[in-house]
Image (cartoon, rainbow, N blue to C red; front, top):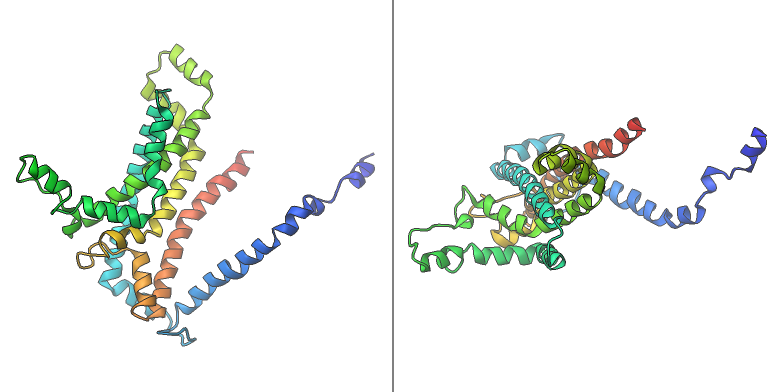
Amino acid sequence: MTGHAKAGRPNQFLRNLNSKIASIPMILTAVVIFLGGTIWTVVYSFTNSKLLPRLSFVGLDQYHRLWAAPRWVMSIENLAIYGILSIIFSLVIGFVLAALMDQKIRFENTFRTIFLYPFALSFIVTGLVWQWLLNPEFGIQSVVRSLGWTTFAFDPLYTPSIVIYGVLIAALWQGTGLVMCLMLAGLRGIDEDIWKAARVDGIPMWKTYLFVVIPMMRPVFITTLVIIASGIVKVYDLVVAQTSGGPGIASEVPAKYVYDYMFQAQNLGQGFAASTMMLVTVAIVVIPWAYLEFGGGRKRV
């Protein structure tokens, strides 16, 4: 009977055959364009390519020049500050807003739309809007001074030491609404019986969130973290719209460094090296996520 059962089972390879055939173009696109382009970039990062790519290998010279460049070091420092603070504030603010929205408040749909609306705008529009708001001549500083506080100063985009925080404000304004929606979806997935049991046991609400709800929302937090981190690594247009990397090089980021060297300075080798370092950063984010989502899941099963 076992032999007949095995003979009656369809071949695993033939299951969903139409779907597999339909996915062949996308698989080929991913392998040829994405994987092939990545390998091509890494290989040419070891060359002395200038205006056009050429296989003139120089070893690790491009990477030595990269890490010796003050502009690149500044961009990495800015990315670290921007990234760490963006992750912390996005998760905290997004979760708090989601917890408030989960209280079955009136006009919930209206508030949800208001909070999510900035995410529908492009980074260029967001950057220009906040460039105006943070302009000391007619922005927040000018408005507050017109109300009588003549010594009030708030011009982060014009102060090199804090300009990256001005960029961070604009990014949080745009992206926090999406984080709130993701967190709200996770909160709505929590069984109502858990809340009832916590109330019966007299557990304070903040403890329920901290020790019960948040651990149960681990997959939501991991997914949200990956989305935020991927946006942090490739941040470019927001910086260009707000500061163009200035004052000086105070708000440089890696993506802008790559663009400038590849398309303006006509130094492809240096741009490829910087791109490869960005690839390493993405791998640092994606590999732990993949392990937690897939490797850890198999072990639990």
